[in-house]
Amino acid sequence: MNRFSDNLKYGGRNEMKKKKILVLIHNSMVLMNQLKEICQEVIPHIEVINLMDESLLRDIMNLSNVNQKMVKRICFYAMSAEELGADAVLMTCSSLSETVDVAKNLVNIPVLKIDEPMAIKAVKYTTKIGVMGTLRSVVGPSKRLIERKAKDLGKKVNIESLVCEKAFKALIKGDREKHNQLLLQEVDKIVKKVEIIVLAQGSMTAFAPILARETGLNVLTCLESGIKTAGEVLSQ
Image 1 (cartoon, rainbow, N blue to C red):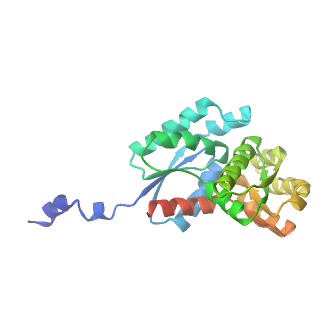
Image 2: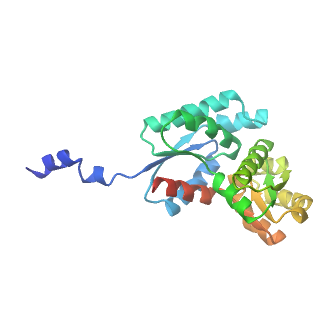
Image 3: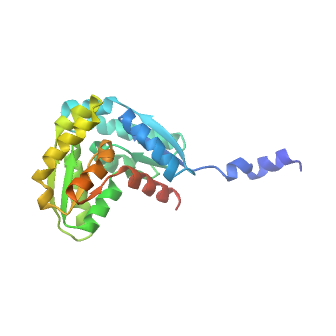
């Protein structure tokens, strides 16, 4: 038997070494570019495919919440990911994390929330948790996720939340320095009431070390921990 027919019989060397596929669902180019770098560093052995729908961010900002039409779109993207051969799907927007609870019932592959590992870590660390966000549509789902994880662990948590929409507007305009300054001005409202701060949005990741330095508190972000956990799921 020649080498070509041998490859056909056994699926071929490339088939035997086929990479696992992770599909990321995005609503922001900024976040997609950040996650591309993290994926290259944390899960280089996994093929990453990006699905982008910037209209999701537009609709979230206009409505300040997630409606059934958005849930339907995420379900469609999850099913499309499975059709294209994905081994797992990761929702990268915390505002849309609760859509995962619907979408995961429609496919036969894991559908993950990028902020879930962060929520679990926060609950394990303390019961006094601060949640900071720059969109109201994000803070609500983040609080509920933390509360659910606390319940799973048999714990009761006290959550202090803070929303600074002016900071998001500054970031959208490309002024990250103003974004950071506005958040620092607001953090005094909760800093003495909490022992850890959760940054509800991936767009706030670069602000984490600044906030930790200014407050002396442990500050959690979701991007790297979410990608790392997705890699662990795909390695099982």
